[in-house]
Length: 96
Image (tube, rainbow, N blue to C red):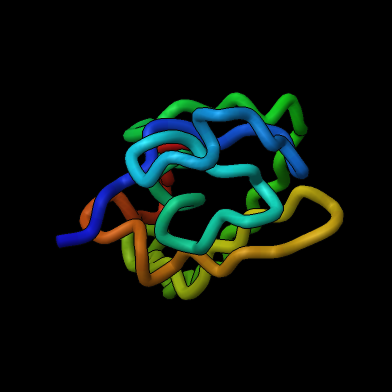
């Protein structure tokens, strides 16, 4: 059973909460599923960082034919491909 983190803290954070399995994780140690959960609002974003979200989509002849190919999140130092982790929340109009 995978234990989900409750928040994402600033990079390099070494607080006691970041050392617990069910606590937080520093941004520089977060994996793509954790970043995706943060972007979807399932866990708290306590990073103190501006995050860049890039959505790459295919547009058909009709704008209703738009499909999302890739979603990447970056903090300037690292990039996470969260495409496969957003699940049903992934659409041409992402929830973030």
